[in-house]
Length: 367
Ligand SMILES: Nc1ncnc2c1ncn2[C@@H]1O[C@H](COP(=O)(O)OP(=O)(O)O)[C@@H](O)[C@H]1O
Ligand SMILES: [Mg+2]
Image 1 (cartoon, rainbow, N blue to C red):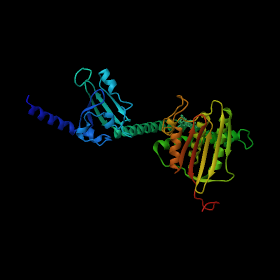
Image 2 (tube, protein in one colour):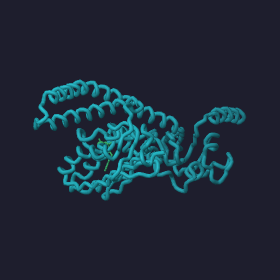
Image 3 (cartoon, helix red, strand yellow):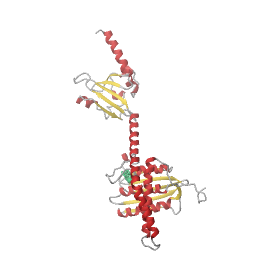
Image 4 (cartoon, rainbow, N blue to C red):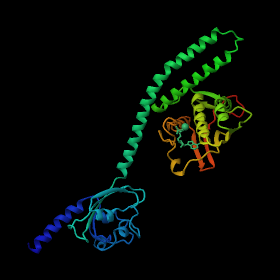
């Protein structure tokens, strides 16, 4: 083969390899660059502003990743030792990017100083799309679940309500069970609202049955339900409710559901050893703030950004569904409010719900 012909072939091969959009590099076992394509140079961090020819002989981690040591998750050495192709997703090479790294070891045959091909592919967008699809999938599954549950529960609930109302009508005013029957009817009504709420969340509906109502009064009656649980768990319940009415606009049942979710979580967090549960309602000019503070076990930092995800739970099967906070988040957002969390391990957790006040005509403080 004459030299001219070899040069000709080399030009053709290089043109093909340079046409690839993915970075491609040939390195030796000490991470020295032997050959690279154009995309490798173009996408490199290139902290020293090298040009195409100057890459040869430099360390890949220095010029490509802009580091002074091999990337922490690099598997080049390992796959070369095992003589196996391997691939992994690396978030270490470039901040905020997901690179798929493929390694083909021993390209020169099986000698000790054989070279390694490394191929990179930016899969950031693909992964983001997959994640959002998985989330949509979960929400879809939740929709089906909610539909099924609502269907199954609604008819027996309607039965409970109808019979309670019938019994009430037939009871004499002085009947000692009258109040109990009223409680049954009210509790069934509450269940109905919750089931509808779950369905609404799955469908991402706007809140139905919107009314202007006193949040302070509603918090008080919701907490009557929670009191029973609190007593059982040796929890000291403190309530800081203003001695006045604060009106908000929205679905009473759904906001009550948010409060119940937060309180149930707080009680669960204090199930060993008890603690303090503090519920505060506070107002500013145009907002009302509902705070639920517990002195429970707290939330680890890595979980904090996931707790509002549907199905995220740290509880055992049967103890938690991972829906409470996802539903609460959706309800608060539908009410044009905000829900926030602060937590310290071993100290406790505070959830804050901010809701806009209702514009009231003829109410003191309204305009
Ligand atoms: N007050 C809290 N203290 C500690 N962890 C909490 C608290 N509230 C929520 N969490 C964490 O958030 C997760 C999700 O809560 P949630 O959506 O209500 O679902 P579930 O209660 O069914 O697990 C819980 O499993 C728990 O790990
Ligand atoms: Mg919960």
